[in-house]
Length: 455
Image 1 (cartoon, rainbow, N blue to C red):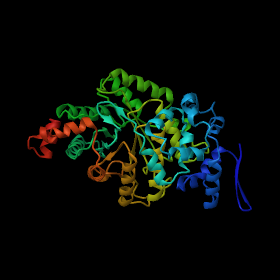
Image 2: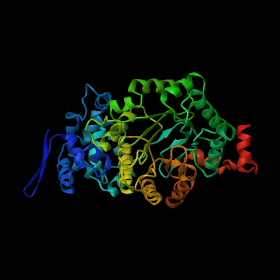
Image 3: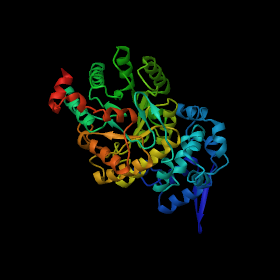
Image 4: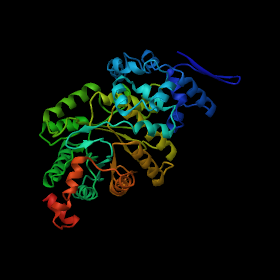
């Protein structure tokens, strides 16, 4: 299906829906790198005007990737709940935007239509939205998940405690965990990115978090972010695996570059469920995504990076994950060049994930070679917290010394909670009200606490 829009005597033509979505996208270096971005501001506006008139039903009729060749496309279309879609199926993309911003589109109503929305619909409508629109709609949606703690309730902001170390040194990692717990971080998960991919290394780190959790009765869950196959082997060996992690993307080819497919994720999901380690819920999986991942693998199938990202959320939704994290500025300036592009992408991702029914977090971050700084991240953090983001990262000093990028600190979470009157998850809040970690330290300093933890 071809599309067009006329400005004066100039007719802008777009050969198919995939091209139209790419041309309507906000400026970003990744789409420019791929050669699919709008050539001018006028062409971008023309694409958005044409996109506004596209019926939502067109996205089912014209898949952006071949149904027979792409398993993510098959999953998205096969699982679309047409009954849930029916209340909005008669709308165009522009009309859908207006409806989302209306008083009638309450959080409850948006939750009811979420199973009927495809990722492409979410991506399309986001391209017609300003920043305040993305915030206004996302703030109405509350997606709640549970394992040992509850994430996503109104008035709450959770954190992932991320104590990475460049040599997986247990002493340094334990110190980071203690530091984070003392600063009220870690209710979403204590999650470590390991340097080593060996099962032995992953087991060591999992058992370290388990000692923390049991010794100090911390209501949280653990995750060591190794490849899913390594975690599956750790489970077979009896390691204390809580959340199972994997990076995912929006096309079959991009997921293949990560060494995964839907069948493997299904196997890991089932294996983790059989452990029955969740105490108040069974949301088990933790997915990370990022705009540009499919393009960097040369597996974007001509789609723009934000639409590919939304399709990753369509895949994630199938597994009812505990957490989905857009690591928004991590892939680098080749895909999101500066602070403005990173901020826009973070708000788009959060909006699309929430609209599709996911527990969305955001790693508010940038690499040191991007045209961005911590002021940009402070702005994005405040905007996301206003939009109701479920959780953010807590990194010692906001500087991940293993992954070599800049994120948000324990203090950043405390600051935005104080600013907006937010609290951690209720189970973690109760633990803090009973004294938190200080209750167990008995006046010991941090080095003594670490020594005691490591025996």
